Length: 69
Image (tube, rainbow, N blue to C red; front, top):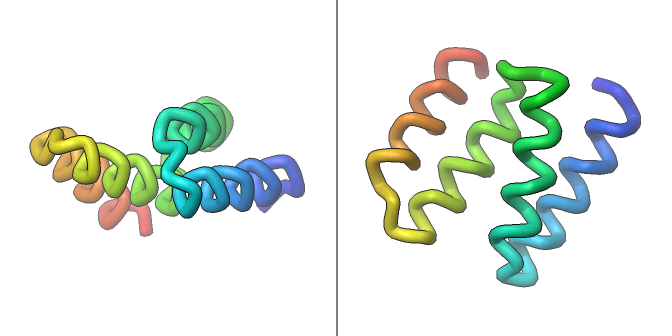
């Protein structure tokens, strides 16, 4: 995993822990722009979607994460 992706993932995790879901989602989408099958980013987006009440979208992200993870 590249250093940039590791850094973005760590920053997204900090944002998640701070409740800054939109900032975390932005970072995770950035990871997916470089690595579309990044399972940790997909899982994170699934978590965010679930927290926002979009359970169908959460299921999509988590399904993709399990396919690639």
